[in-house]
Length: 360
Image (cartoon, rainbow, N blue to C red):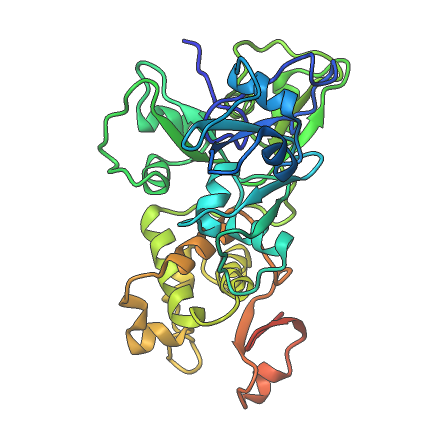
């Protein structure tokens, strides 16, 4: 069965034309984003806003002329390699904009100097390359479990990311946002095969095939394909319940802090999971009891705040941390900058974000 994936970071449909792009198409060359025409718009103005061309928009939408009208739905081809721009619309959040491009909220915030996680209509965002998810078009016979198998993730994670029940039956043509973790590009070399590339990047042939919308195992030298971004710290296996638990901890500990600090709290938990000094699961780390003092490691577990629902910001920060974002560069501890505990204050400082100090 031919599986068909919407192009990397694409919200609706991919439009690539050899007349507009070079013969060897970079993997991050062209994607499209949805746009609804508003009064006063012209193709020239829209093209300037998205750093593309009138010709490209006309081709992408099969327009017979340059005429457009308010309320008309278009897809706008943009180049992530050259640096795409996005004009924030009413109702947009960093999380929703990120979904359109397969990016995390943290990546967007960092690229645009946003410290509080809030964006307003009319603001222009710079869209960085390097997404953490791809849209996928459901094919006949697909199930959540089957799609999860293609991408080395879980059916529960796909269901959660798309607002579905784990028991939901999929419909052909339905579009899912599927988490991949950070991606980078690789230029195929003579003698390469999907197996050797997958082995080199510690993934599977099925993953490389799915992410790149390949219909066979045939690849050719100089072809650019998506592969998992290299990670020196490894990955953490987790359940949907643990993702929610992490989001609740972040909410309880840092909901009023800059978004980068919220991601940092999640990263500290994951860094502990990877460290031999702490339990090897998210649940184990969060509910760990200090063997010396007999107290919980995290105050929200002690006072019960861990049981409060996660905020939207906490959920986005948890997903960013789980996708590999770590603004702390490997910190194992965090605490308020005004704490008087001499042992904590003696730890080597990794970074200070807002009122939180992250240490090793």
